[in-house]
Length: 337
Image 1: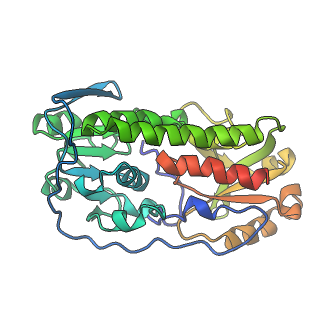
Image 2: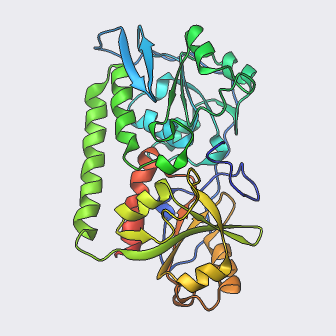
Image 3: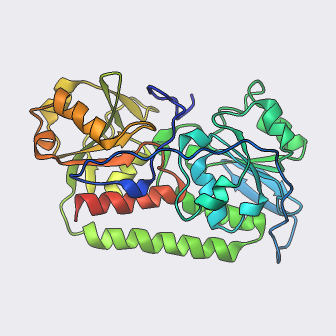
C-alpha cells in the first residue's frame, strides 16, 4: 500500500513548511508555490575526487555505480531539499510528487528550478523520458511493472533505484527521524562526497542533541497526534511518534494501531475520554490553522486541550529527511517554550 494514501479531501495538495509550527496561535496556512513542468536538462557530474566503481546497500539491495550519477530524479519534496543541501542540485534533472510538500526556505530557489515530471506519481513515459541513471524514490510501490518499470528492469537498463531507508518495505510504521543519516551516508558514497555527507550528519546529530538537552530532564507532555477528514478524526504513529518522542512528548496512541498501519480513525468519544493535555494537529495541504481550530472547537468543545488552546500544528507530510529534524526542533519549542 502506498504509505501516503490516506483519507484526504484533496490528496495531491501540498503542505506548509515545518517552520510554521506554532502552539497556542492561529494563523493561516501557507500555500504550495507553483512549479512548471519543463524539459529536463543535462547536469554536470558532481563527483570530483571519488574512486569508482562504487557499491552501496539500500533496502537489502546492492546498487552499483561506475561513476557518479549525472541524471537524478527525486521522488519526494524533502529528498529534493536534501540533494540540494548536499550540493547535488545540478545533478537532479526531474522531480515528482511535488504536490506533497513545499521546499524548505534554504533550498527553495534551487528546488523550484528542477523540472517537474509530475505533481503526483509519474507515468512510465514521463520517467523514462528524463533518462535517469538514479531515482531516489519514496517507496517501492510504484515500481510494479505497470505504473512504472520494476526496479530490476530499470537496473538492467542502467537506472538504479534508491528508496528512502525508512520506507524500504513501504511500511511507514518503521520510519524514524534519523533515517536521513543512513541515506546521507549512502548518498555521500554514491556521489563521491562523503565529507559533505559527514558534515550534514554531524549537524543533524548536534541539532537533535540540543533538543534532548533541553527536554531530557522534563516529564514528557501527553499528546495525541491527529488530523481530520470529512468530519472524521484520524490518529498517527510511525515517524510521527518518533518526532513526538524526540520533542519531549508521549503520543498516547503509539502502539495502538493494527500491525503495519501508521494511521487509523479515532472516535470522538475515545479522544474525549483520553483527554490528552495537548493536541498535535497535522495539517493537510489546503488546511489552515484557523480552520482546524474552528473544527476542533465545534467538534470537541469540552476537551481540555481545546478549551485551553493547547494545540500545536505540524504539516502532515514534511516528516522525512531534514524536514523531520526541523519537526523535532519546532515541536519541542512549541511544547517546551
